[in-house]
Image (cartoon, helix red, strand yellow):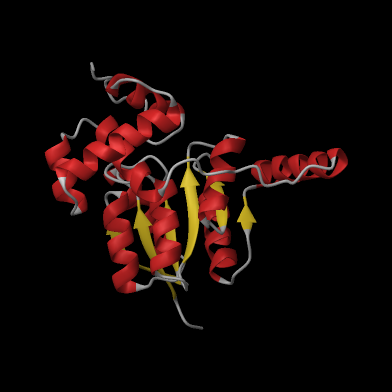
Length: 225
């Protein structure tokens, strides 16, 4: 049987090493690359076309929501399996909307992760049991209420989301412009559009919004406007 190739997108070295050992030991998988941030994950997925990307959500440079969205577009044959400590319904819904094929909590066992990778690689959606139960309950309630089950509307464009993350991480306009290959004036325009769309009036507010919506981790120090 052909081995399932895997790209690990995880910024914590110890966890990444543990995942690599676990997956390689199964005999059915081969971890072919590791990404330390979301932007690197997109680049490696586009270049290597792994069978599955095991994706964390809270990562520097580009979070898992946008990284997944971009990978699905850049490498259509590659599946994304989320492995995250964030298991709130909103996080799950946003990752599914971005194109993820499965979602596993970091609190689950390695055995369950191995099963999830195999299922997602085969094209089958896979969610850890607690998440699957909540998704089914939410879908059932939507059916009973006569409402559509997909309420995951994306208020920001992909580029706006990238700019928001880098602003919240403390990057200056000049640095953001260089990283994204756009002008400083364009970065400033995106910043103003973000503030208008989110009804936020300073950089500290943008940072608080980024933390509240899982774009960056809460350990990021709030900046002053």
